[in-house]
Amino acid sequence: MKSVIAIAEKELKDGLRNRWLIAITLIFAVMASGLSWFGSASVGSIGFSSIANTITSLSSLNVFLLPLIALLLAYPAIVGEDEDGTLLLLLTYPLTKGELLLGKLIGQTSILSIATVIGFGSACLSILFFADYVETSELFSAFGLFIVSAILLGMVFICLSYVISSWVSEKSKAAGLALIVWFFFVLIYDMGLLGILVATEGQIQADVFPYLLLLNPTDIFRLINLVTFETNGTGLLSIASDQSFSVLGLLISMLIWIVLPFSLAYYRLLKRPI
Amino acid sequence: MSIIELKNISQNFDKLSVIESLNLNLEKGEVLGLFGHNGAGKTTTMKIILGLLEPSNGQVKVFGENPFHSDFSHHRYRIGFLPENVSFYQQLTGLEVLQFFAKLKKVSVSRCLDLLEKVGLSEASTRKVKTYSKGMKQRLGLAQAILTEPSLLLLDEPTVGLDPIAIQEFYTLVDNLKEKGCSIILCSHVLPGVEKHIDKVAILSKGQLAAYGSIKDLRNQTSLPTKINFSGCFNIDELTQKLNNPITSNDSGTFSLEIDNKDKLPVVKILLAQPGIQDLDTLPPSLEQLYYHFVITNQTSPPAIIKNISGQNDIPIVQPKTTKIRQGEKP
Image (cartoon, rainbow over all chains, first blue to last red; front, side, top):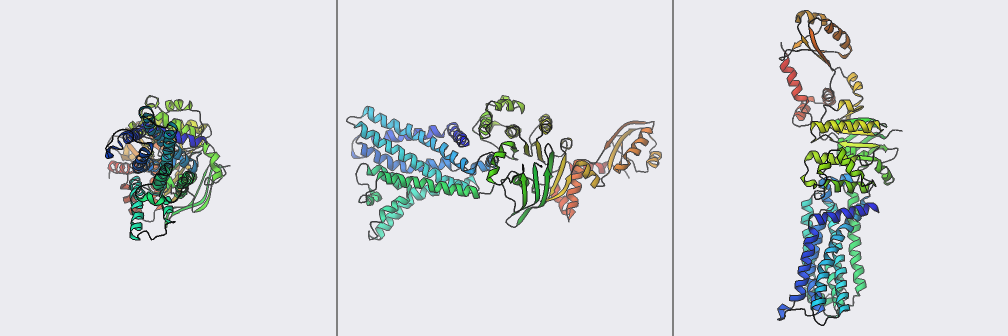
């Protein structure tokens, strides 16, 4: 366990040193504050509108940004160590491949978590102090759930990066594949689903369709932040409105999305030629 | 019990055979020099010993156990390894990198400063590794390899990038570790200077053991001549007759002759008896000559290999030396 902590600590230090942490924190803080105060500018008002509006717009933006950041942060995890010669060296140490991967996950998740908590937390506090008529408990629970689900979403994409990173032999290939994964889950998947829905004129089994959303972690993330407000989602998410997903169920499916890619990455690392 | 025992090891990658029926033994406190051209299988051999590769055939035992097995992990505290190319973590300082490795080997963090001092990096310890030169990274790699006082040390090209003084310090370190009972495998292209510090030589060529044994054994296996250099004033013709050997006079005013190793003592006696003799040196076949000999004889088609070797930077020492001897020859 000590080795896991040593690896995690080193990853965190790396993140601090190459300024990933500060950059991500700033992006999140600016994004969250901007959206909470100017998010309703399109309907003609400036200032804080409602918690539901803020969280909804935050999650739709975050769904693009967070997976990208997580993928960029984590894609060199294994292939980068391999290119630097440190993977070879580390494996001669009393350290298993599982410990190495777990340490990396903990370290890089910490980077993402610190950035998320500080970035979005500061926006939450600014709403608390400067906005009128806000239910404090509602604000905290909404932002709390948002932050937790954002961290889980980040972990999903960190683990997907590990799969890529332990599979390929070159860093540049890993970077390219990471972008493809991002493109697929963030843009292509929903468009594809929508396309099928429109092409079949909704004839496709309506009770199966919402579950297809669970096959995309970014949709799960958006659902988590929707169901608490009992508002109907826009676009593709509206098909899930009839279905009653529980927050707990959604969080569990997110966890499955973390465990499965992590196991696959571990398997690929075991098979990886050194 | 041998520290390392390789029995009949073969390693194939797909259909390419990298190592063929290799047998090696390393006892406690022994230093083995592992030599060979690029692609001869040196690094693969090291990876097999380290348990990073499972050999296609044969048996490996390190500390009496199979290093590829997961139970081997507790022995890893006793193993030090310096890889050929390692750039470490660019964003961290030298001290931080070493402390990271120390934590993995459960070595107290305070030992790191001493080790950096030992390898001559104490002044650069707070600088980021990305500012380090090749030689400094090599020193850091060395510090990392001796974090725990290892029982087995594997060094892949340890002297690359080091300046002459650092190389000297490195060999002193090797000698000290050897005295403490550490078994060492030294893998190198650079042959001069290494002779004094190794007990055994293994020369790999195309994945096969071309020669294996102490330097003395290897000299006996070959009929390579011992060279004697001397200077002074003589009647060359008379001396040639006495010695029953052709004498070559060099441009620098010295003379040399090549003899069989067993004739060394009589020849030296004759030379010393000469009134005009001023200086005398005997040079038994050097490691690079032995290396060259074994690598060439191991090949079925020597001309192709000579071409191959001269195209690489593996043994730059060999080629110029032969030419020099030829230049010195007079009809």
